[in-house]
Picture 1 (cartoon, rainbow, N blue to C red):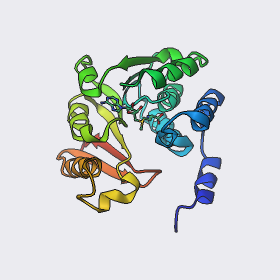
Picture 2: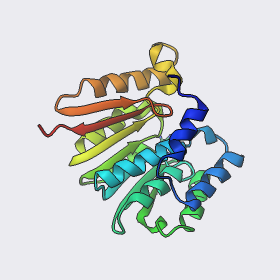
Picture 3: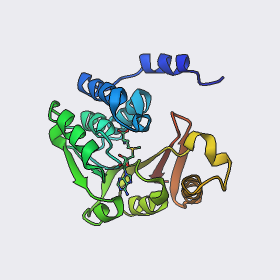
Length: 212
Ligand SMILES: C[S@@+](CC[C@H](N)C(=O)[O-])C[C@H]1O[C@@H](n2cnc3c(N)ncnc32)[C@H](O)[C@@H]1O
């Protein structure tokens, strides 16, 4: 079966979805912010919220804030003392994010670090329950290394865009594609971890420690 827009909408229609504020943020971004195709969208948002709830997640690190949609939907699924630390380099899109987070009761769970990913990660210590990788593709393997070191025992790494519009089937196309291919190979070959690459939106690679 081909995943058509109609089928995706049917799935969305039968799923628990983000809040009205998150919808407004998504619509605002799609209406006029450059690069809005980067948004995770409703289906992936629903999956992230489900995973956070199911896994009793309390602490999240996100690489790639953009306009703050994914950070907000993750914050919505966290308990009152949960935290999302989200990292991005773009002050304009981060300002939009903050404006919408301020409209939500869940916004206070979110902490923004405005720095390049690799630099920002040096400020973070301890372990995290969910690490969402969705920033510059050329650093995916470095972000994965950091995530593996900082994942709590029952934690989950989620890596977005791991199908890269299907370009992962064609090595040598460009640097970003090859970086994602290398990342995916590294994930595949991890020992002591369970992995599943889901064909949701542009590919969600889920990685957790194996406990058996
Ligand atoms: C795919 S978007 C994130 C989308 C967001 N997770 C969402 O769905 O709402 C990728 C983001 O990575 C950011 N980015 C690019 N290079 C970066 C870097 N070196 N460090 C941190 N963020 C970076 C971009 O500014 C962009 O906002």
